Image (cartoon, rainbow, N blue to C red):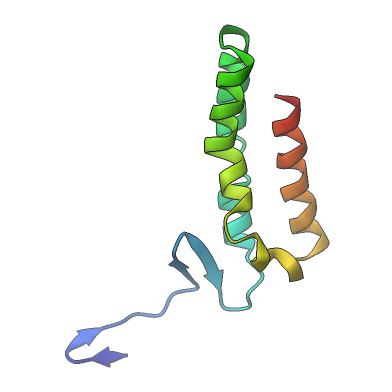
Length: 95
């Protein structure tokens, strides 16, 4: 597609305001991006040397905010996607 001389190529996903949309609106790419266990594992590593309040702040900054942002879009997700989001939410509570 070309608009005003600029070529726009097709893509299987598009990121708008931090939310990754796919052509079937399954939000698989988006849920994968926010259910990364990278942050949780790093928080677990420093948990023993931080105060509880500080750990909660870090968890909220890196985990809760990602789960909460645009969560209304998750209303029609598959059970598999919902379970992965719930798993991350439960793990953050244990941290």
